[in-house]
Amino acid sequence: MIRINGSKLVLADGAVFEGCEIGYSPQEKYATGEVVFNTVHSGYQEVITDPSYAGQIIAFTYPHIGNYGVNEIDNESNRPRCRGVIVRDLARRHSNWRASNDLNSFLKVMKIPGISGLDTRRLTMHIREVGAMPAAFGTLTTEELHEIAKSEPGTSGIDLVSQVTCKETYVIEGDRRDKVIVAMDFGIKATIINHLKRLGDVVIVPASTSSEEILSLKPDGVFLSNGPGDPEVVHGVPQTIAELIGKIPIFGICLGHQLLGLAVGGSIKKMAFGHHGGNHPVQSVGDGVVEITSQNHNFAIDPDSVAKVAEVTHVNLNDGVCQGIRLLRAPAFSVQHHPEAGPGPHDSSYLFNDFAKLMEEAANLNA
Image 1 (cartoon, rainbow, N blue to C red):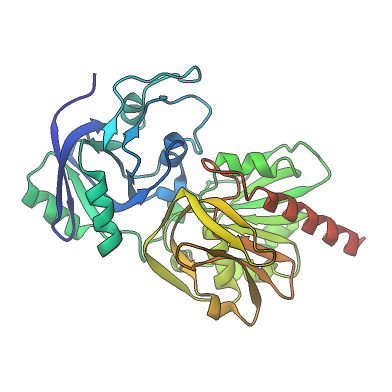
Image 2 (cartoon, one colour):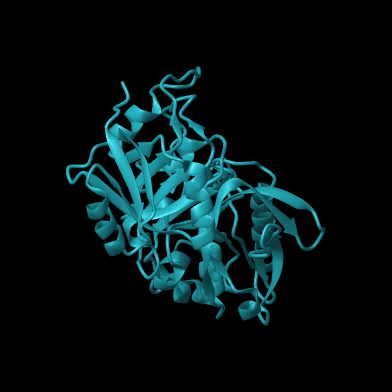
């Protein structure tokens, strides 16, 4: 039975949205975070369990969420790191042969509060106009929630990677045993690991791992994972990446893409409301091919800041944001979108094959 307790979402600028309480009921009677909207039509379980949403409240633009329930295998991490979930209409019944539970029960078990029944179209239009911003939602008064929302710091200037990275190194055995890939974990998703293990054994290391420790593992390549928040406060990691450039092939996505940009002296800008969804058109500069991509980020590389050391390989066709770079004098490349597509289209999965080719070329060069 879905609760029908009244709940309000109040943004830091004072905008108020009324709805009903769903999911977990926090003892404090409220939850806070930075509100962002996601445009996926399906894949809500993968979105909710993506560590890149640490510190954020996810508002789904698709109106009907939860109709196929949840299952035991689609989680992208061991537990959600988002602060809350906003939906227009939470399905009261689910139907799918893979389902083991309903979404509302899942949110309760995972201790993720939520709010449904509000006008997500109006909320999305408001965020598009004024930008992603802190908010609070719950059963407190509007005035109380507004004061709490104004004190919520959001995601800028906060190291969220330290909250989601693994505590110690672990190994996932690959489908082939002749290659070793070290994956720096900034909030890595399970689907990414599944793609990487097709290329070789995957050694997942904490974000704080030094370049010396990484090189001591004798990897054939280094992968820079996705992750949450502001790349400029992930202290020490750009320097670590800089020390690896030219010594080993590197492939980065999402936050890893931004960190590679910082490692070569680039600068980062925060976007108004970011890219969050599974339908972003991205053009490959080299051949003009357009890929429909999965995205989740609030920050982006300023392409002019890396023009002397890298070429732009991909561009977002919605707003012209830099989506990919390749270094000019080292075997390293990165993209802002998610080629693993968990969830999302598979148009960009070829990038994992490009990484495999880069590792083969390096191995032949050093043979």
